[in-house]
Image (cartoon, rainbow, N blue to C red; front, side, top):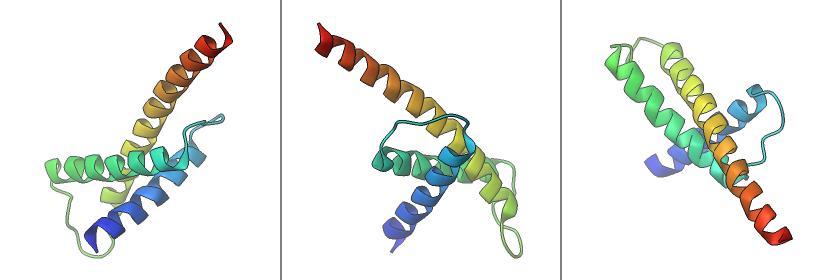
Length: 94
C-alpha cells in the first residue's frame, strides 16, 4: 500500500507543479509523476531537518515543502527533457 500511496501523491504533486509553472511543459505524465514522488521525498527530508515533520492535525508545512520541492524538480527535469529532446530532433533533421 505504501508504493501505491507514493505514486498517487507523486502524481498529484507533479500535476499541481506543472500547473503552477508558467509556460508549457513537455515532459510526459510518467516523468511528472516520478518528479512528484521525488518532490515528496525531498519535502519530507526538509521537514524532518526543520523538525516540522509531525504536527497535530494536517501537516500543512510538510505539504508545502513537498510542493515547493516538486515544483523545482519538475521545472529542472522538464528543461533537461526539452534539451535532450531538442538535440534528438536536430539529429533527425540532418
